[in-house]
Length: 95
Image (cartoon, rainbow, N blue to C red; front, side, top):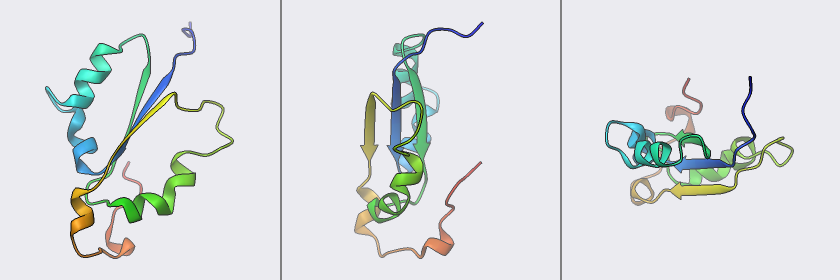
């Protein structure tokens, strides 16, 4: 049986988001706090900066998606202070 549709919270950012679901991480705490109340979706990519994010924004958040997020938390900035990394060296869609 499928439960009722719940709000979707998306965490989108760099390695701070990617690692947030580890033991005691802020993403894990958020998921535990909202268990059975909201679906928490993690889109964290280590090494990314805001320029990388802007290039794939429409793919991560398609306007025609059946479910639109109720909340999006973005966390970029640390990698923006580094020299740009060519996109060919950045893992775009980790499995």
